[in-house]
Amino acid sequence: MATRDAGLDIMQIKAADVPLPHAARTLAEARKDCLERFGFSVVRGFPISIYDPEMQARIYWCVSRHLGDPVPQNRNGHMIGHVIDVGDDVNDPTKRITQTTAKLQFHGDSCDVIGLMCLHPAMAGGESRIVSVTTMHDEMFRRAPDLCRALHLPLIEDRRGEVPPGGNPWAAIPIFMWNGKRLAGYGPLDAYLESAKRYTDAPPMSQEQWDGLRLFREICEEPGVALNTNLQVGDIQYMHNPVVFHARRSYRDWPEPERRRHLMRIWLSMPDGPELPQSMAERWIVIERGALRGGVHSAGRKAPNIPLDPTIRAFA
Ligand SMILES: [Fe+2]
Image (cartoon, rainbow, N blue to C red; front, side, top):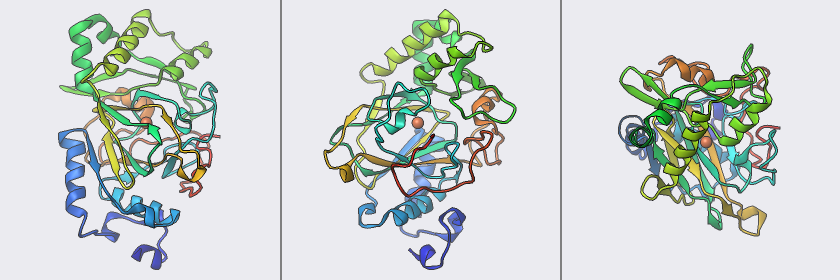
């Protein structure tokens, strides 16, 4: 509130501007949980619904600033995005599945930490799901070492229009990557691997990679592998992308438009995050520790901004 009274633009706010004496310790623990312990953290119960949309974004930004440095999450330069159904067709390769009610497969985003703050839960479904990269790797290796090895080789993923300057419209990145003794993961969405077949200059994925991907999807869905969280109003979930994959279940919305499931998303760079394998740079572009790394760096990306209208198209 003080930052708004002081006329401070949301995107200018740094952690030092908002000491948050009541929450700082909890947020320091949440940060540790993400980076050093579990790969994720859920902070519950911010009284977020009493505020207007600008203040909701402001609070979310200030809280997240205590974990890391926000980076743009799409070509429109959104520094806070809205996860809400805008009625897009899931099968349209120019659209994003996040802006529908459909299930979202296990995947990773191109940044250190992704945060989701719940403003409205769904009427039914929509649980957020997390699996460990290490668990997935070890289970794949135990059952089918050859298929696991195939997922250490680059898979070809459609960039869907978010092409870095001088880059290909497709990305070549493995699911499992070693960096010394440390394992890192990047999870693509099947639809983006399928639509990458349209690029005739891209090397095709091997049958072993497709088989490995199918086994990967199967294991994710087995009982006891994923952790499900049911975010309620005012809950924030942070996830460390190199060590956990995340997903969401399909959902049904409330009939009233104003009660639609609505999450605010933020992407954070962590200056003290782990060293990353070079192959991660295919998606993150910048991976150096201490640098503002990850985020979307596509040619022609718009200037950083925070849309307050939740129905704004993230990728149109
Ligand atoms: Fe995601």
